[in-house]
Each structure stands twice: as C-alpha cells, then as structure tokens.
Amino acid sequence: MPRLFIAVDLPEPVKARLADLCSGVPGAKWVKHDQIHLTLRFIGDADDAQTEAIKTALWTVKAASFEMRLESVGQFPPKGKPRVLWVGVTAPPALTGLHQRITTALAALGLPAEDYPFAPHITLARLKTPPAPEATRPFFARHAAFNTDPFPVESFVLYSSVLAPQGASYQREAIYPLAPSNT
Image (cartoon, rainbow, N blue to C red; front, top):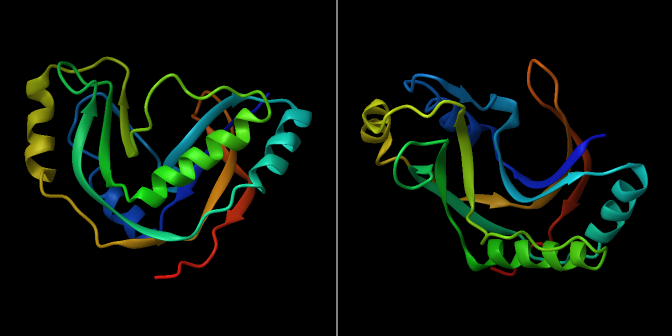
C-alpha cells in the first residue's frame, strides 16, 4: 500500500543548489536530487478508495500563488545528535495558509491534524546513527550563509511513495494549481 504526502516541488535551479550541499557528513543518507521537496503534510498509508477521496478533497483547496525563499541550515532535534539535516524556509503567511487549508480539507475526510506544529523545511539528509555534534560542525560552518533568491510557488502535489530496499520511489498522483497572485 502506498504512503501519501502533499508537497511543494522546487524549481530545478533551486534543487541543484540544494544538491550541492549534500556531502560532508559521515553516515548521512542524502535525499536524491529528484526527491527534494517541501512537505506540506504527510498522510501515510492509503488504499485506492482513500487516495481517490483525498485527490477529490484537495481540489477544494483554494489559495493564491506566492513566492518563498530558502535560507540557513539546521538539524532535528535542534540540540544534541542530529537525526535530520535541513534547509530552512522563509515562510510567507501564504505558505502557512496553504498548509491550514490542506489540513482543513483532510479533516473533512476524518484525517486528523498532525500532532506537531508546521515547521517548513527541506530535508537534505537523514542520519540513522546520529554522529557526535563535532562531526556536523564543518557542514554547518560551510553552509551557514546558504540562501536562495525568492522563487514562485504555483502549485502543490499529492505524491505516493513506495518503500523499497534501494529507497523510496515517488509518483505524482495529482498536481493542484494555485490561483495567480494579485501582487
């Protein structure tokens, strides 16, 4: 059974800049270039009927396109040994609003909101065995000033993900355009 998530795809030049960050930490499992995205909502396992209901519900989400930019690098958890390395998102209110509209549409299907606050970020790597903090210091020092120019967000995507020994494979299930911005 596939797992579903909702994401914002990033422009290729932004993905290329992020891919350039993906090295220099022992034991890191770096996200593949073609799988770099901003997760808006993880849904989890869904059968065909649930997937179709989610696809339909997401068409009710109405929001305007907007611009966002990426800046800084960080880790989860924020202190101690890292399990995830990420790039931060300068989140305009429109991104938070889009997340809230998606949450509302899914709640109408009986899918509860996530138990944690929305913290927009781009995952770069996962660390199964977290290294000592000193192993990541050069990475953070090298990329402390990372940032991108603003780029447009004109749609969001429902993805399915199937786990396999060589890693997850993603498939776009539906693309939802955002309305043209008034600015």
